[in-house]
Length: 330
Ligand SMILES: NC(=O)c1ccc[n+]([C@@H]2O[C@H](COP(=O)([O-])OP(=O)(O)OC[C@H]3O[C@@H](n4cnc5c(N)ncnc54)[C@H](OP(=O)(O)O)[C@@H]3O)[C@@H](O)[C@H]2O)c1
Image (tube, rainbow, N blue to C red; front, side):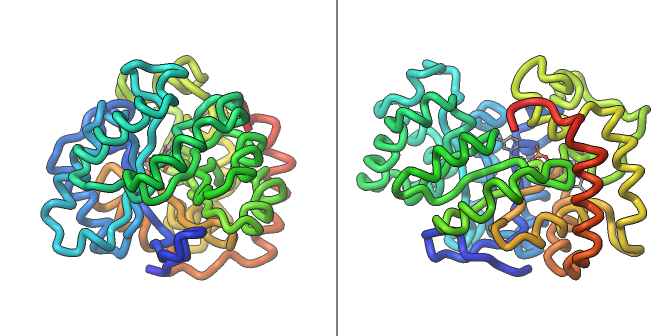
C-alpha cells in the first residue's frame, strides 16, 4: 500500500482508505458487529491507515465499532480516524455550529471512538452560507488550540463550497465526490487545493457501487438503503447517491466503460486507480460492507496507472456521455 502526505499535517496516510458509513448499518441496510469488525480488520491488514466516519452514521454505531476495533489493536496510534460533525439532531440545524454544541458533539465522538483527541474532524456538508460566514472555522481553530481536535477539514458538495473553504487558515482537508462520472473537479479544484497544500479525500469513488459493474436492472436494495429511498434525492443531496446519475442511465454508462478495464483487474479496483492517478488526490475512501470488498479495494494501490490515452478517452466519455445526467449540487 502506497502512502501520500496528508496536507499540512506532514503525516502519511494510505492512498486507499476505508469509508465506514456502511458500518453504521443505517443508510446501507443492516450490518452486524462481526462483519463490521472483519471489514475493519481486513482493510488494516491490507495496509489501510485512514478511516472516514461521522458522528451520525448509524446513530453513532460506525464510530462505536471503530472504537471497539481500535481498542484491540496494539498499533492503534498509526490508524488515523477522520470523523464529522454538524448534522446530529440534538439540537440540529444552525445551532449545531455553535461552539458549545460542536464541543459536546465532538466529545461524544471521542467517547465512542475511545480517544481523547480527534485526529481530524470535518464539517458534514454544511450550508454554504455557514461556510461563508466563517464562524464555524473560528470555532474549529479554538477547539484545535484547546486540544480537542488535532486537525480540521470540510466535507463539501460543490466546487464553490470547496473554494470558499480554501480561503480559511488552518484548513487541512476537503472531502469531495470524485470518480469517473464526476470529473469537474479536475479543472476547477485540484490545482487550487494543491497550491494551498490541502488534502483531498475522495468519497463515492465507486459512485455508490455502480463503478464496480455489479448492478443490473434487477438489482434490489433494502428499504433502509439510500440507494433505494434517495435515488432521486428525496431525503438528502442526490449527488450522494449514485453520484447524482439516474440509476438506469448509469447502468448503460457502466456498460460503455467495460472495455476500458484491463483483463484480470476488477472494475472497482480500476475505478479507484482512476482517482489515484491524480496527484491532487490524497486518499480515496471506498465504502465496504465486507472484508472481501475492503481487501479488493486496497489492491488498487498496486495497479499500474491508466495510460494517458485512457485518461483522454475517459475525459471525452465524461463530456459527451455523462455530464448531462448529473443532478444535485456540483
Ligand atoms: N457527506 C459526506 O461527507 C459523505 C457522503 C457519502 C459518503 N461519505 C463517505 O465516503 C465513503 C465512500 O462513499 P460511499 O460509500 O457512499 O460510496 P462508494 O465508496 O462509491 O460505494 C460503496 C459501495 O460500493 C460497493 N463496493 C465497495 N467495494 C466493492 C468491491 N470491491 N466490489 C464490489 N462492490 C464494492 C458496496 O456496495 P454494496 O453495499 O452493494 O456491496 C459499497 O457499499 C462512505 O463510506 C463515507 O465514509 C461521506
